[in-house]
Structure formats: structure tokens, C-alpha cells
Length: 248
Image (tube, helix red, strand yellow):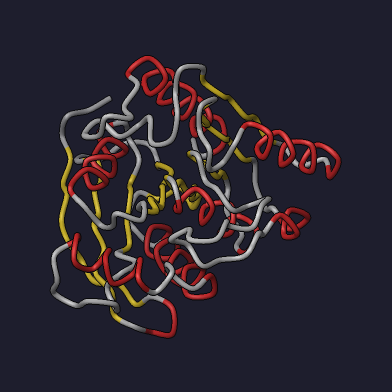
């Protein structure tokens, strides 16, 4: 782990060639070729807490890039205001999400020092989108942190207006790590167990971990849902996983 990193806001060409904002963090200094991570933010948006996660990856030796998925909804608005617009729209269209992640992955692969390997991680709605991206693009590792609406359709009144995407599982391009809370309602342990069975039947490499006494958003240090024991163990499993699949 290094404390020396550079973090900055950049512009990339996302889905459809649209210019979108993104947050980039890279370790400083020369060294062995490194893997990279596309970070998909949660529905509350492109916020300071998720930027801190981007920097955490850089501090641990990975180049990391988080595209602002809400750049088009409210250009120049605060993360809270942009998230409100996106929520009112039912979230980000799946096709556009895949295009934005593809652009972020291409940017990371082109960086000096890249070993060409790119992983993806997402939290909450981003967990579902991480699975979607891994089924739609050629990636090297994917992490789903409590992503709902993969197996089950969202219930009435749910802020996400999306469809279940478990049917994409045969196209999963890389190993998948799932980190979930036993007290979560979206997704429930039953839903994640069903997804695990589907992946097992397909012969898709994956490992799922469900933490007792943890619910949704247990990684979020700025929310009451934060569970330090689960989050710390989750980070350890996450870096072990990326170390296996993204290292040179």
C-alpha cells in the first residue's frame, strides 16, 4: 500500500461519444505494470464518499476511474441534485451504462503503466450495473456489492426502473465476487443464493460472502448502515480477489 497518489477530475467520451465527467486516481511513481478498476457509484451519485473509494484503490496500487453516470441529467449540478433527477428518471439506461463503463475501461487500459487488465466494482444500484457490465464487456474481474434487481424485478415504488438481468449470466466474462448483508431486503439472501446457483450451473467462477448483522450499504462509512467488521473483511476479500485476477 502507498500513500502517494494523484487524483483529478477528467473528461472522457462515454456512450454515444458524449463528453462526461470522471474521477481518476492513480498511484504515483514507476513500478510493475498495474491493473485498473472502474468504480460504479451508487444511486446517491458521484459523491465524495465514492471518490474516497477511488482513492483507496490508488493507494493500494490500482489505477481507478469513476465515470459520472449522471453527467447528462444535470450538467454542473451538485451530486445530490443530479441524483434526484436520475432517481426521478428511474436510474440510468442499461445500454448507456455499458457504454460509459466501456469508455472508462478503454481509458484505463491506455494509461501508462497499465497491464491491460481491468476490473469493475459497484455498490447498490452499481452492484447490479457491475454484473451487467461484466456480462456485456470483456473484463477481468467484477465485484457486486449488494446489487439488487439482478434476479428479481424491482417491486412497485422502487426507485430503479429496470429489468432483472439474470438471463445475461451465460455471457459473464470474468470471475465475480459478491459481498452481501444477511439483513438486506434488496437483495435478499434468497436472491443472492439463486444467483449463485445459476452461476454454478453455468460453470461461472464466483464467490459470494454474506455477512450476519449487516444490511444494505454496510460499506458506507457516512451512513448508519455502516458495519465496520463486515466492511473491513469485505475490503480484505476484495483486494485478495483483485490481486488474483488483476495483478501482473
